[in-house]
Image (cartoon, rainbow, N blue to C red; front, side, top):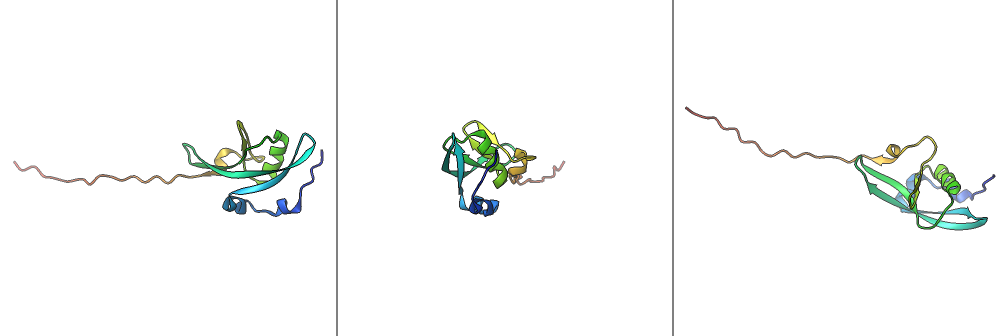
Length: 112
């Protein structure tokens, strides 16, 4: 199956998408060409903040894979999460900075 997509969508940069907060994509759903808006979502996890694109409307898994490969970002729709080839969630994590604050200690000497 051959996919054709607009030059405009191919030239958009991953950093621009994250800065803008959304991206509009063209997808084939049951033979119809549709336009969908994917929004950028940042989710807190144990290991850091995971950034991905989220679709509100149904997109077939094949199209999710194609778009994920093209934009090099993970895409989520309900329970389905798709990553670009060779990538895992850890590749899209922003590390949390942990700061530890220690209480002031008072040193005292005991006189006998």
